[in-house]
Image (cartoon, helix red, strand yellow):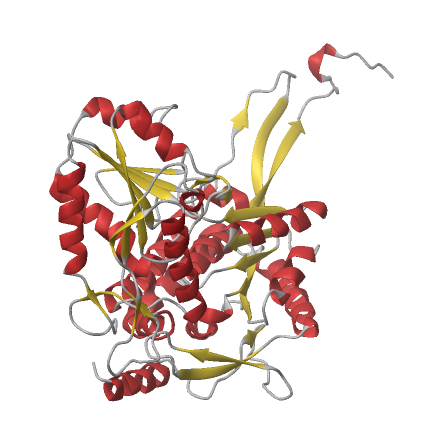
Length: 517
């Protein structure tokens, strides 16, 4: 796609979603005016050119959003859970119709390939339908009481407005994991997106809010684009927001957790990943090569689940690395809209510097570059943020291998015994996703045992990247706390209440306590 063609793509995408001239980054049931506000200029990582201006929220805007969200919550919680589920299912139906347009917006603003961009919107659709099903499964337990003529059970009650702080790399899907499940639980949601992907958030909010109007439903979702960390600070310290779900760096997440905990609030934290794949001599090498390459290269290595390390058995190390280098040499880098492109741009120039600095640091610490990454200038897209991927032979004692680098930098290690591989795998501060490639049942089960992978997600013969919404998503150690989407993660968005009913003529006490009046 030429630069001129990409200009047309930009205009067509904005027009299709009704974003041309909207310019407001603040929604609290209606789009706020744009006069007298600071502006964030959204640019595309594909060519570095301007896409749109978005107004930034002030503190008073946030205060209004919180008040309105609380008021709407008091209405929304009275809808029956199945009715809430029907409304969220209808939002999924709308997203089916807008999938191509919203996916194009993800490509435009974040640089994902069309397949990945539309895949992200498909994930939102899947979550909407999943949440709709959950609306009839918000189960509480009934227990046998030790007291005669008593009934004892638990029920789950909505929390209130939920704060959602999302990152640029999944600018739509992560919001849906939280917002749609929170919605069927009876909560409202206040969204603070990354400014690097604020236009996608605006496009999603516009589509969803129009659908809620058509359905005659309350505007349960709010949007607040803010400068830097301002919005995150406001949300962290706001007592009227009982739960904050944050996706981002470990450092920022730790500070947020401290502030939310200090006011007795709850947090869901999805922080850094430093994901490894173990490739044993008993693996299907073709499967392993594809799984490792996808994990390391998808979204240009800008997924929290991207494969950062591959630990290969010494008996197959040379063959595997040679074949992996051939895979890398055949990967097409460039405009994500071009046919055959697998690796698009990094999000901005700062990301490129961080990536190149990590390569130099690794070399200085004893790493050996096997496939060289560099800053690329692509004809017609000179302002885009392109790099070539890197494969680096690394040593376990190198400090850099314990740091997450958001880019296509893959460290390769050699191991001899399986115990050694497990130790290398777990010897990092993060614990999000993991993988093993093997056809040996004993190796597989060892990896999945209590002494195996210490991550929140464990994969066998598939990539560390790419999780299904039916399984709870999240990690251990410095990766954070809590889970999003899947199984019983809905409980995070509700409060548990134990109920005791006495239908007798006396007031017997538990544990045999006597109290006669």
